[in-house]
Image 1 (cartoon, rainbow, N blue to C red):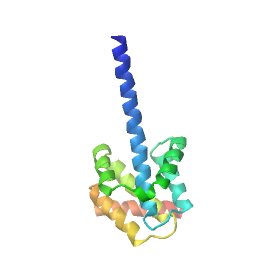
Image 2: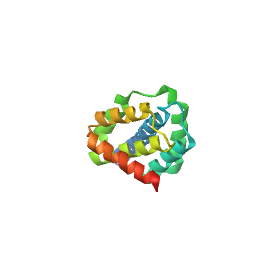
Image 3: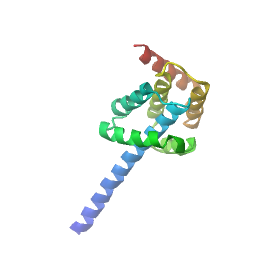
Length: 149
């Protein structure tokens, strides 16, 4: 009986770890996708991704560094937007999705210029995440305000 309980508890822990890793990999992949939409990833964009994952999404810095390194290596093997958005829609509430859009705007804006492909990507993501144009626009304004400070 005790052995059975230990196995159940150990499996729950591994499921939580798997969910944590999947969240981090998904967020990192999506942020790298946004940063690479213009064909390059600047150091300022990578720094913004790291800061966002650690400070906003409360991820561990060591894990972030490992997962980001892997995501940058695999940037040409990116997944479809549906892969990202279906998981996010199942696991994130609307406030966290809006926060994600704001962070994506910050990443895209961090290199000082917005390419049409970048704004198009965020517009499509907002639609797939069921975020209104008004909320997405407000997220962009907040991102611009943060970058001006």
